[in-house]
Image (cartoon, rainbow over all chains, first blue to last red; front, side, top):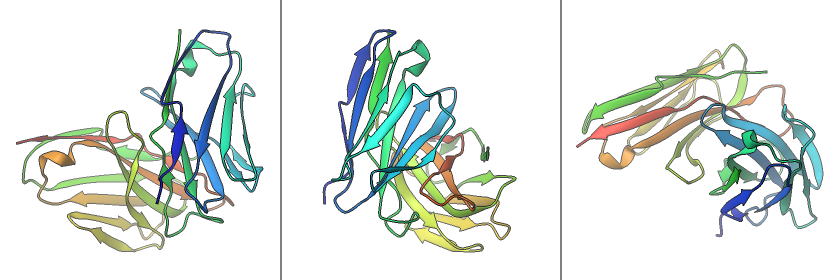
Length: 115
Length: 113
């Protein structure tokens, strides 16, 4: 079966701009979570969407937002980009409910560079 | 928030040696997961643990969910060059209703042929 698809793979943006990243989960998965990975802070949870509703939110400023569509695809948006937002953004999808036998499958990520 | 302390941060071993790494926390977790990440890719799930005391193997990998629910370890036996990468532990907090994971800082494994 197809895995988690994130687009684009690479992105270069200028400070102050905004960016939208996309994540298509594994077919049948209704939970999509987003993480930011940086060398200094490691993997940090941004937010989780389940059935088009935000179910969990990490400790990130309001410039980071997301949404989920009825087909479970998710997007995250970062507004007013800062240099420190440069990171690998990963999404993970899982089945309904808690992390189950299907585990938690990550996409390959979107590498965002802010200049 | 919850913190996962993963150690060691890095290991440089000889091919064929066994490897052990662990994660500890002051908080309780309902689920422990172990991932491996290669450069430029997302983490790939290696082992999932769901019950305190559970010991699970996946080929040369063995992981255990600590009895206190605050720790987990991963062992790799007879390491080979393709084991090189960064290994992460991740825990699902006991009081979280969704699919939020807290990650350890990672163990970078280097294998000398």
